Image (cartoon, rainbow over all chains, first blue to last red; front, side, top):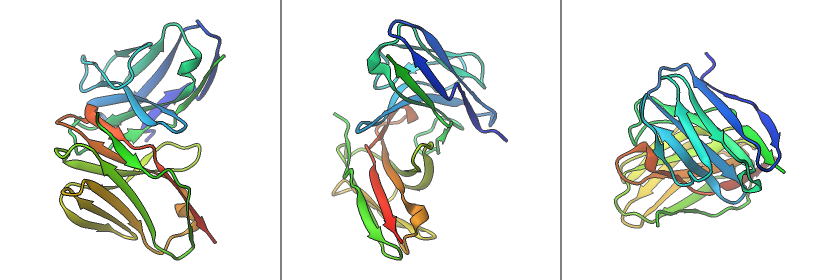
Length: 114
Length: 112
């Protein structure tokens, strides 16, 4: 049982390049999330998808777009990468998206924008 | 402004001691509180959650919630070197998981 799988694990981009971070979960969860984690800033929510077909902005959505491709997959796209987007990105999922639910996290993507 | 405050540490305790991690939050209406553990270079994992005032125990871990004072704490009894990690406090503001706010984390170091 893989849980939440993120690809790639590491990526280096030049300023202005675009890329898509992929995330898939095999737990039949309805809700999925993208977080970024920066030193001294903690985890901050970028976007989330409460259910298939819906997406909502989180705390720090600027510079990102998301796609909930189906129930399993939730991708995060950087259209024009900036050095400020250097961070560790975590995808997560939860069963129904209720406030008291456990989040299951992927292993993370270390992104550097030069 | 929705805030979750934690002392960044590092908090250093000897093996076998009790480690006490604290967290304060700004919204009196918050109902759900979580502690995630994150080892260096790894992803967070949930270790405790608490919704009601008082204590909740799970093995060596005890979560304490005081809504009147707006703080939540995590006690780790008989601390082990394997407990060395960053502990993230998380609080739900409002009715959706999209309003889950994480603190910056407290780094715990348990010395053998």
